[in-house]
Length: 330
Image (cartoon, rainbow, N blue to C red; front, side):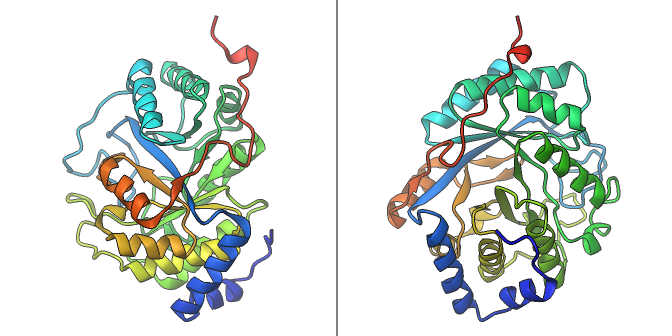
C-alpha cells in the first residue's frame, strides 16, 4: 500500500471526470473487497453534551445553544444491553462515543473499560471515540479488548483553525499515533460541507493516505447542520461531492473500510448506491448518530435487499482482540 502519495497525484484523482473516477474506484474496490459486503456499525453516545471544545459543527459543545440534552456517562449495563440489541439487528461493530475533550484516568474511564470488555465478550468489534488519548490510556483500552479507535482529522490542516481552536491538528495526529502504537485499529476521516475548499478535502485525504500506515477505517461525513451551532446555515453537499471523496479515498487507501457516515439520512437509495459503487463499504445503522438523525433499521434492511448486499462479518481480516488477564476485574 502506497504511503508516498503527492498532493498533485491525489488532486488529479479527485478532479478526474466523475464517471471515470467511479469506474476506477469500483475496480480498485473489487480487487481488495467483496463488493456485495457492507460493514454494519452501531454508534451509541455513552456520555452526551457539555463538551468544553468549540468544534463549529458539533451540537454537543457546551458553549452552543442547541437542543442536545446533557447526560452523564451511561451505566455499563445500559450500554451492554444496547450492544446486544445492535448485534441482534445485524451490526458487527459497536462504537461508543463520549463528549470529552480527552480521556481522564478516573472512574468514568474505568467504566468505559468495563464496557469495552463486555462488548468484546459478545464477539463484536468494539470501537470507542473519547477524544484525545495518552499512550498509557490507549494501552489500557487495548488490554480491555478494544478493536478500533475513532479520532477524525475533520478537515485539512490549513482549514482546521477555522473550525476548531481548542485543540490542534498535531494533537489529533498524536492521538492517532498513540492508538497505532498500542496495536489498535485506526478509524479516522472527516466532514465535508463546512465551508472548506476542494483543496482542503484533498489535503485531508492526503494526510490520511501518507500516515505511516493507512487507517483501517475512513469515515466520510456530510455535515448535518444543527441549529445553534456556527455552521447551522451551511447548505447540504451534493451526492457527487460525497462520491468524489469516497472514490478518491478508495483509490489511495485501497484496503480501508470507507464508511458512508453522517448525512446518509438525506440520501435516496439511488444516491447511496452510487456511494457503494464508488467504494463505500461501511455504514452506521440505527436511527441516531450520537445526536444527529440516521436511517432506521427497516430502511437499511430494505436498502440491502434492493441492492443485494449483505452485512460483513466481524473480524473478517483480523483476530478478535484478547483481553489482558491483568485487566479483568476480580
